[in-house]
Length: 533
Image (cartoon, rainbow, N blue to C red):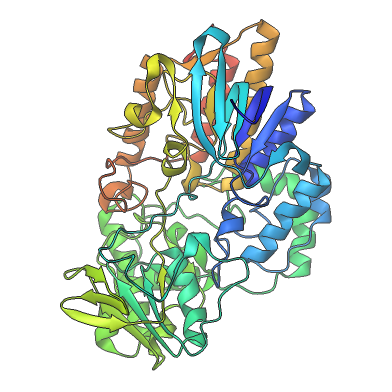
């Protein structure tokens, strides 16, 4: 017998930016709703990712809620790209301002959720012994929340300290005087390595695949820029929503081809976008993400920059990627490549000779043992699907979500999956999610879900589910749109390629404005593609 039993209208799993806004909307509708959060407080990915240098790669004034004009005006950001502590403070401010904490059960994980056809409800079990029956189960579990720790042989034998960037101790870590290993060179490594290097006596980075990174060119946020945006926030937001990734409207996205520019003009354009910093480098020309030859020109420019910055030519070559620029998530850094000029920083290539095992004092690769006081796993996440599948969700006819997605995730609109009535996924696979401004994406999904639930109640309907044929068509649409770009051309976490045994499927939908237009049409035509009971 469960310790606690509740009957509710909805359960929202996750108290990051998506879960908090979903709770706010459903509460305003007068529905009974419970949030479930495995962390001890709100913030989602910004609660867990406290590693040194962690910050957002979308500018502060854009990576923020837009549902409340009062909130937009009252919050003051201090940097162009906000650091994790400031974003977490913002999340806490939102939770307090809108009275959300009382609706959330913290330090609690969903251990199972089963659809009960006879009552048209989900039966949800938690790690705290709760049992909740709810009409709707809304997964706001985030795209990058299930940490991926490689199962190296001997991991339990290592006697030093181990950390994962996605589950960093809240109190922080002092690496002063230590010999430190960082395994991985993705975004969290690129952000943390420069700061760990400043503390550690010796830092060794183990790299399987080099990554492209553009300087963030971060700095204090100009108060005049912030004031100008706040004076016209609604217009800024509208123009951002019309952008492919829902941000960056105030910096030119060029439509001309890199192939048509003269070498000098091309170099000047790339240099200007390098100096601007961040993701917008991909907007220097209109065909960087679409045309292999244009992409190669942009990639050559970045490799040239790496060779200019890194003094040792052998190290520089190891840091130069030979993959398509942007097919893995482009990183934004502060001093990453220059860090390899420090005498206490070493780079070890494990592409041909992978890490064999951990030992009592360190690790072994290519027959050589390295000894460390601490090992940092900057090995990323089981992205998009990991957190969903870990909740042990079972739909109609006893089919689990893990079984349904055994060959890769299948959704309709990235919101629902056939055979799982009244189960919604916020920014799930098949939606723009990680290829767009995530806060804009979760707001859009939360509002769509809230309106659909309201419509069901108005119609006197108990169930909504994805139609099988609509799901089939949507899977094809997502694949076709990805295939028109260069995104599927390398082993990225967009494809699940960083997790051994995970099906290789490109998960995000490319193009935020088209996605928004599609959902608007679906809604205006009586929720075409959904089945009701």
